[in-house]
Length: 281
Image (tube, rainbow, N blue to C red; front, side):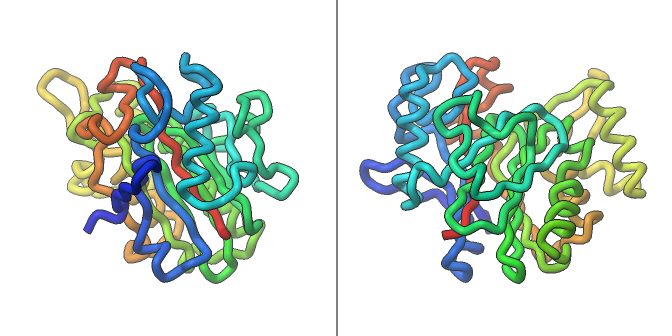
C-alpha cells in the first residue's frame, strides 16, 4: 500500500501525506508537495518551493506560504536548510525556528539532515529526484528529515541522522519509524562507473549478498547502471537498527510522474523543487 496519499483540496496545493503515521499520531504532520497548486510560471509551474532555481522570489515565498496554510501551521514554523549533498545533520532548536523560509541566506547552512524535539517547528527539505527520508520517534517525541541524493546516500546520511537522534534525544533505533518518499526510481535513474563504484563499496561494507545487490544496482549492456536509491537507503536504515516493519517505502517515481512532481533528470535541470516536511503540532 502506497504510504504517501494524495490529498486534493479546493484552493489549496496538492499534497502527499503519510497517513499511516498521521492517523495514529495526531500531533504529527508529514508529507511531500506536488507540483500543483501554486503561483509560479513555467518552467516552474506552479508549486515550485525552491529559492535556488531561477524562479521569482515572491512566487516561491507565496508557494511556501500556501504549503503552511494547507498544513495548518504558521508560516514562521517552517524551517529550511541550505542543502549541499553531504551528510551533516543539524539539531534544530527554537533559535532556528523559521530560518530559510524567505531567503537562502537565512537558512541553516550546509546541512542535509535536520532533527528536533521542539513542538511547533516544521522541518523542511527540497527535492526534485533525490530521496527524502522521514524519521519519527513516538517514544521520545523526536522527528528528523534528511535529503539523500546519491552522494548523501553513499555517505550514509540515514545513519548520521539516526545516530544524532540517539545521542541528542535518547532515541532507540528500534523505536524510530522511517519513511522513504517520492524520488527517482530504478526505472529511470541511470548512473556511470563513478557513482556505481561508490554504491558497490557501500554494499560491500554492509555485506550485501549478490542477489541483494541486484535489488539496488544493475549493470546495463551499454556499460551504465540503473540505481535504486530508495532500496539502498532502506538497506542502510535497517543496518542502522531501524526495524524493517517500521519502514514505509513509496512506489512513486518523480521521473515517471512529472504530471505530479518536478524531476531534475527528466526535465533537463530546468524545473522546480518539491518540499518534504515533518513537524510536531
